[in-house]
Length: 185
Image (cartoon, rainbow, N blue to C red):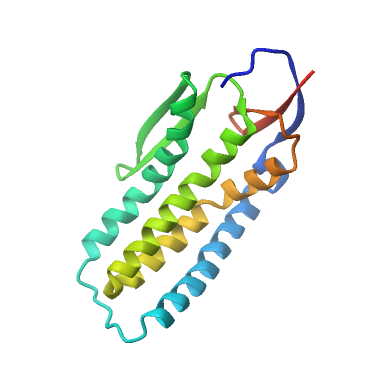
């Protein structure tokens, strides 16, 4: 749903200016390490009798390469279902990693933006935990993927935290460095 009325900027969120790229990188790495310790410990306790196999390394690296594109696709789908003017630009970075930029041409409602922020984390986390339960011999692979994905979601969590404190009927407009929270005049 698009906004058809005049709005003022309530707050501008730019993670690089607000936190700094280096700090976000450190938070991400710390999140990956701590989530791996927690997730692997939890998985190990639940399936302590299981022998781990390492014969699916190619499958693991394939899932690792697909993690980011699927994450971005899950950001895109809710917006695409509701908004007509959402564009994507997919590129191959370093000839190996598929990257994506999502462009919104109009402001969208706060609740829809919150859904787009948390959907990848919720969906991929449930999927990887489910796979770890179904295939317990490969919990180490799923623990690594889940912790890497949790680190990938750090900026989403920071955006969501900032968004939760905004007015309820606000709109979100993305720009190159972050987003603006808009309120009706």
